[in-house]
Length: 223
Image 1 (cartoon, rainbow, N blue to C red):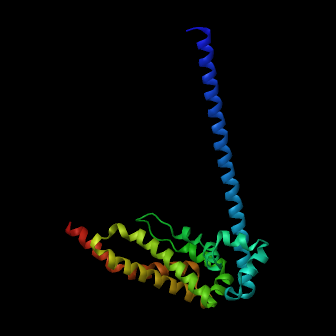
Image 2 (image 1 turned 135 degrees about the horizontal axis):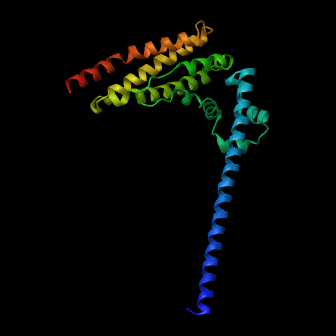
Image 3 (image 1 turned 120 degrees about the vertical axis):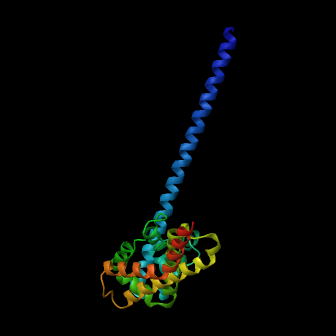
């Protein structure tokens, strides 16, 4: 190979290395930009959520307008609508972390104690939300959805496919019963400890789904 060919090959490798490094830098900048954007989104959503909570405590959910929220958060109306369609979505975002309290792998017991402790810590806010018609409907519907999903994940592996429809009805009934117990506890001023309520809720869940467990056990013995 002559010197000219060697030089050309080296130049090609150098250009290839330069392009790879440039592409790497662009990729790094994009990752960094996404992280910055994510932090901005999280910051804005927290500002809006904190504003809504403060306003609920002051005058109740039903009396809070979107204008009140953006004024308190000191953001523009377009910023609000870039994240949420209405204040109901903002309210749901504010307690979305509750879903994590119920997440359990299939086969592991549903631990309700962290949730009851959270309700106790947020008693004033929860009482306000449950005392207004609109927020009470939003909150209970969301809690039923979260609980129903958790119960399904816990018991679904034990169910036969042909029993799916009945199983879903039982999960829905169990979730509704648990939420009714929780909301009654809040309305009555939380007369029992979170620990006692977690025990009662677990016992209620077991009663509602007792037939499902018995049926599953019977199928296992037959197999």
